[in-house]
Image (cartoon, rainbow, N blue to C red):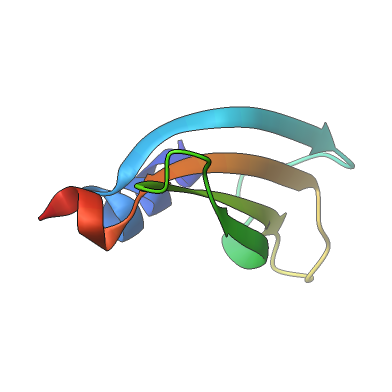
Length: 85
């Protein structure tokens, strides 16, 4: 749910699909935890069609102690500026 809200705000008009999702649970999330997300883009490239891009990112869910109970690695398919005009 957190990831979906962030995705909708940041890439609503350009997101075409998730090609790969890897979710790793490293620890518990407990009632009352304060959570936030730290996102890092690790790579980007044009798809072979040229009008789309492939972006690889890591999203860490952190709690109030800056521990990372969940890591989400995603490969996205994104519309490029040329394909949106």
